[in-house]
Amino acid sequence: MTSASQTVARKPQVQQATKPRSQSFAKGFNLGLIYLALIVLGITWIFPLYWMATSALKDDPQIYTVPPVLIPNPAYWNNFADAWTRFDFNRAAFNSVFLYAVPVTFFTLASSLLIAYGFAKIPWRGRDKLFWVCIATMMLPWQVTMVPLFIIFKNLGWINTYWPFVVPSLFGNAYFIFLLRQFFMSLPEELSDAARIDGAGELGILWRIIVPLSKPAMAVVMLFAFLGAWNNYLGPLIYINTESMQPLALAIYRMRTLALSMGTTALAYPHLMAVSTLVALPIILIFIFAQRTFIEGISTTGLKG
Amino acid sequence: MAATMAPRRGMTKTEKRNQIAGLLFVSPWLIGFFLFALFPLIASLYYSMTNYDFIRDPQFIGATNYVRLFTSDPDFWTVMYNTLYYVGFGVPLGIVVAFTIANLLNSDIKGRTLFRSVIYIPSIVPAVCTAMVWLFIMNTQYGAINGLLKTAGFPTIPFLSSPSLAKPSLIMIYVWAQGTAVVIFLAALQDVPRSLYDAALVDGANAWGRFWNVTVPLCTPVILFNFIMGIITAFQDFTLPFVLTGGGPMKSTEFYVVSLYRNAFVQFSIGKASAMAWILFLIILIFSVVLFRTSARWVYYGGEK
Image 1 (cartoon, rainbow over the protein chains, first blue to last red):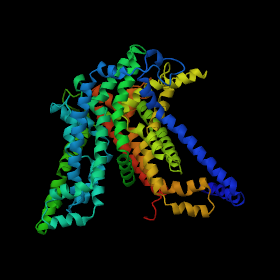
Image 2 (tube, helix red, strand yellow):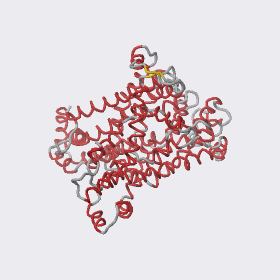
Image 3 (cartoon, rainbow over the protein chains, first blue to last red):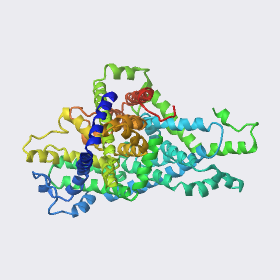
Image 4 (cartoon, rainbow over the protein chains, first blue to last red):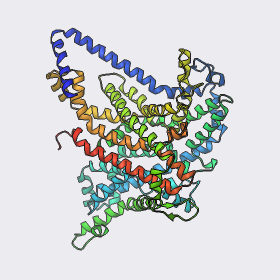
């Protein structure tokens, strides 16, 4: 492969030397092709989300018209409110936000901060060995521990509660511990040493020196912890059985059953698309406002992984 | 291990203090490791060698569950084939597409942030929401794709209702949600030193030659990373097949974790499900180790050999 591409690589040099004008034309042509490819890809990639949002605004006839209706006319904005109240989505949103995502995000951040500090900033015997064990747990597919944990939590009477998600978050998350530890390692040792000489305790150093410097890394942890909770489906499917306790993901699935049984009647599809849009929207908005945090989070953890 | 980490007589006062403080800081993780990783891991191994249904006490039957899965289970090999098909085609295709898109984004274009966002957003939107819209778009009667095909006079495609097309359709959606890999690739591409491209230009390499001889070798560490992450996540994919097709039609999308979930939480065959979990764990481990081992041959790590 390499030698073949190298021989091919030689050819254009001759053209480059003799025909500079065609080279710049070729460059413009190439750039045009890149734009064309990106626009086609962009439209393909955004289409499902566009279709989700616009189908939410349609009535039943517009749903099954051929050719497909690209721009809903008239647009039924009240579909969103109707779909939301068709099932008790207020309750599901409350569960998703206040019983699940917010506490899990907060506790994951707090516990992972403490643990990462212990792995990064205090020298102690056995630290690096234990850190490797911590990294190794990331390799463990959680399906392996899923059944025994279910049995434990069931025996504790935690079915239909969010304790199976909130309580483990108090014990840190290997992925975020890793991320924060890497970040802490990059902070100069002199800062914490100076504070130590001034008589500050380890907690004081973490809280007053490390935390204010680690806001970008903490933002990444919060974002992805929230995202993980908001998007989790299999977890709630296992632990939450009663409808009133369901998070948004399960409530949408309940609506799917309805849509499939009703086909193209009773606004099943517009309503299904409306709730899907409303549940996806917070994530899209968070992304738009915290874009840099997202991208930096993925790039750094991805590269240093 | 605990004995070596306990504070010792030979230590100075500061060393002792650090030993205790360090252990205290990581203790949440340490406790969590025993409670939520190590203990369930061992329990799961034990359950995999029992006959257990959540109600009667587990009954030890040795390796019977494993033997049965491999020799007499009617579905196990179907599930294995489906999963290997999905992973085997999906992951490499996902890498190729993500790397191509990242390279397009890395060229000298305007609006990179916008294009990147459009490609990335599908990978963070809740899988339940995207599953709903794909369910709708891929519908044979009133889905958008078939609507367009009908308009153009082509026959419709039963994306999700044909056993031979359901897996490729799910792979298509998998590839669509590879935005994270694109972002990681793009970050790696932006780290490739310009000087190397200039040197290649001087040597007379055209765009294709520069791509194969500079870009690809320098990105091999990230390709390896995305490959391993892709294999781990694709083997464990649950939400998409479960919500979209429920494993059908004719078990053609009954993937590993879908089947594992059903065995554990629908059939209550805890022993069988635990054995499946361990087999999955070993498969993922073997794939990762093999990739790592062979990586010395194809991954280029700058000068740090």
